[in-house]
Length: 232
Image (cartoon, rainbow, N blue to C red; front, side):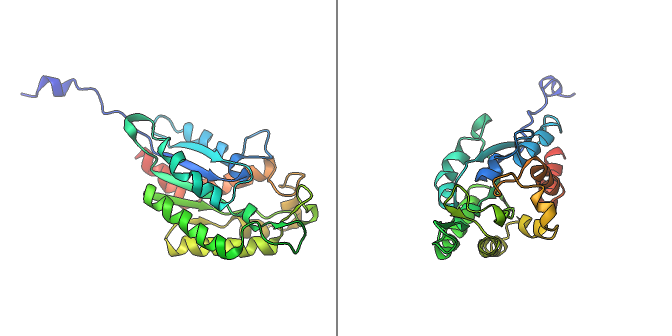
């Protein structure tokens, strides 16, 4: 005869997967007054999956470079656990554009020297892996060089972005972290396509750009697998 208390026991509570997205203004969604950016779009899509859909926290800060993200990573991570002191199961990183900028003029020093960036991005990824079982990296979007300098003092270029992207991708591959190469995908689309998807400042995506980013992220197999596991 079955135990009565077991027969009427309530179902186990559902604890959806939780993720944090950390990075700069592209994570924040700056330049998209309509949709709020790709992270916000992903959050809404996942929320529409129901109670078991992944929960996503946007922790993008305008102007952040790799060192600033690393400095706040552990504190941000530990405060997003919600019920029963649970911590997030995954971290999405997206940073590096601000580090690549040259200061003052087109030949000025980089905001973060490449050697220092190489060490810092490796540290950020390893720090993230110690905190969460899953880490993902979404790469930078290419700028519009014709709109430089940004704020009359920051010179972004495709050549510098390529150098910093290459280091980031290598750091991810070495540590088996999935890397989504947005830069190469956008460069392959042509200048006119990119210009239509960048805000007037030449640095941030506009609403069309963030929609394109969201479409790419939604079809990225590593995150598709995460959403599928959450609903299994």
